[in-house]
Length: 334
Image (tube, rainbow, N blue to C red; front, top):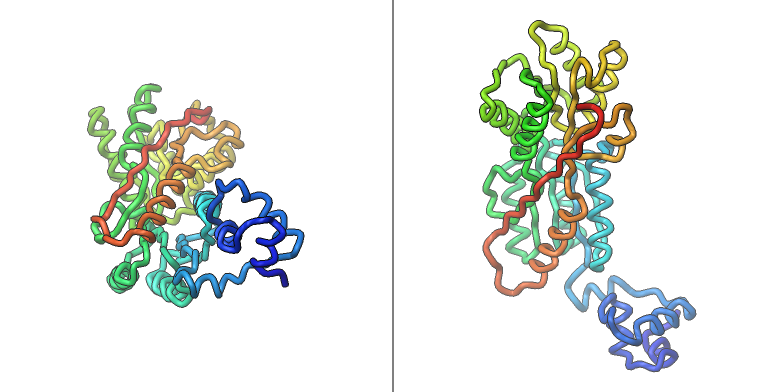
């Protein structure tokens, strides 16, 4: 197998320069492409384990999400994979399914691999005290930790989330502007921090416009499209009924659109439907789904930059809270 010394000789650079370039550093070096070209020609494979021992870093980031079959989390995974990859990190993925024991299991997995940092989406289910203690241990070991999707609690950690309540309040503004005065909310499980915040924004928006609040017009349950569609039809079968349904995410909104279509109800003629996230399928439905777009790329870039800063810093700074605004995307469903 080719060595750094052979590549350096062929490329006409010092072994130190060749080593930095092959490690992903010195990307602006004028020798960068020549060194990589000779590495390809000679079949060089970097010994990552040896490099990790020297640097005391694995260049691994643990990413924990609640589910992988939800298109929202698929977009989150892709965004972080691409952004972290550009910074020389690899992603170790785990799934919690919203279960406390799975969160703890994932943290143990990350520790066993010696990850340099963790991105943990804690929006689903209860966040166990033991998990908070484990995250504190990671920080004490100089590993970076960012908590996603749970910005209503103070865990003493760096946190990042979108402005859920403000986004939904702006959606209420939009619907009121379209003449709607009776609004319903279709949420997921009430233990989900994001849905809680979005419902708070929904109620805030109603209050700002002096609109009626009815307990039966706020529905909680499974976040599957099928369950959301079933609950929506139940709400729409009662009298009086909402003229617009604000859904807690796009996946539930797509289920509501399907249920309305199968029930012979016109959207938006008889009922308007809105979502949250702007997953890829949102613009493919007929009618297209009015929704709130999350800034996936910006969120992943800024979180990656914060992770890298935490990993390299010698004197820890106070926790940072990143909050990202959503963007109203108006389509045919409203």
